[in-house]
Image (spheres, rainbow, N blue to C red):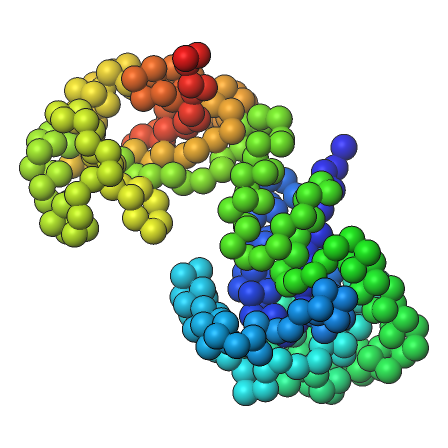
Length: 335
């Protein structure tokens, strides 16, 4: 049975929706899901909820504008900029999206992103129906037909139904995501969506994240001193003579001695200086290893527990000879 899509409700005039549009599809795909792009109107939600836009709230306004830019930098979206006109009415772009979805559901992501890009990257005022239609045309739809949809009573009614449905379901902000009936408001809840999907789904051997890179070193103290100077801080995990690990805003960096890694793999580890272990967090090590074996990949070591690490692991090598570790956390032992 095909899993239901993530419902991604958004207003084209929401900066956080623009940032979320860069992440939602990858997040869904990581869990075998698709995305249903659903337009909403923040003005209607504010009216029902009795709220106002963040930028118009005393004290919060200036902070929110700074947070828009900072959040874009945090998520690696360097093209973000505040449009000349903000906020804007988004009925035109919302109607075009509904029209495009009805014609070809597969076109919805590209059409939505084209109009978001026009507003947030190119500073085009997509409250203007002509500009909204021209932006949608960049995704391959007919500009004349898209423009006609904006004034078509049928699509005006369709948007009203869409907005009413969102309000009935409790959509009060943008972005707003429904996952199997559970609601999540805001880009800062995307990590929770990731967790929710992973915890709710039966283990199928899917890779959840590149969790860290591990370097196998001959002289662990010297390597630790080097990376403490390079990174500018000490490790968050330090097991003397065995293992060290640094936390960064991306993946973690880990160092491990040759003997320790060799014991885990079950054979001599690669020569120090040539050894990188790509560590992949998976939802089920045995399922992941079995899937890879069915695809013709050979394991260096079958799935097994490493109690001192509180992990279950399996190992294979990539074509360059680097170790790849599949791992998941072992359940905590009973108290």
